[in-house]
Length: 295
Image 1 (cartoon, one colour):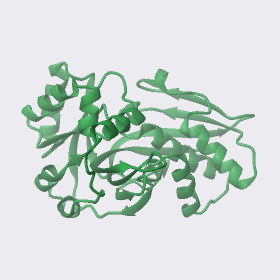
Image 2 (tube, one colour):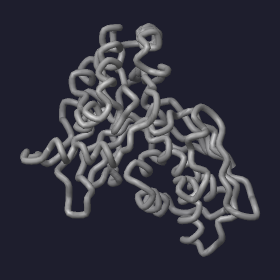
Image 3 (cartoon, rainbow, N blue to C red):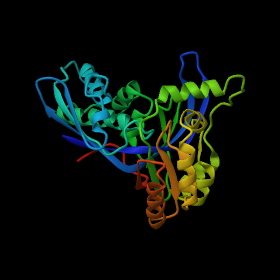
């Protein structure tokens, strides 16, 4: 049973002050993009994971992998043993702020549910996704959505057109907890406002207005990501100079996202980014994309 799952970009990531439990309230506007991982579930004597694709050597193959945890949680809900082999075919950048690990968790959950013939209700699958992590429910849903709470409470959003993107993949990863820690450090003594979705951004998504969306893009984790990885500023500048309408760090980074007007400009910006020497590679893609789909 093979399931395809998309990457995401956060077109808005508004972060509130740290809560007593260490998490942050978010207003997180997710947009799924057409870069995909595939997760294949096959019967096995015990739970095992294999992986292929770019940076596959950086993907954990033990029980810390969200795909493995998804299989375990689903099996526990149904009182069965998680005897399955999960094979992950990676195309989403690893540790890049594009929810590749979360996508694999959602993909494994749906693949195991179908393989085991469980027919788990969608709401239950979303509950398990939320247990796995804040970004995992969106990987199941896809399209566009506003995530509140830790980002796991989703309200699906209308999208009125196709948006063209370029993603610049950096060398190495950035730890999401470290980026949030840096956000907290930078916010010391500052009155952090309650996170809220931008009406202008939601309108731009609904109408498919690329120029308006470019003007509204925002990421409260960009400053802490740049603080931890100052070299990302050169990548952002290179893409903007090459013709991108807007540039931002994707999620907690270090992948950077560039919104462009059309496919031709995307190819130009990707070539310029690759030639700039400020990133490892550049990928062109579009949004929105569907969530987890059985192939």
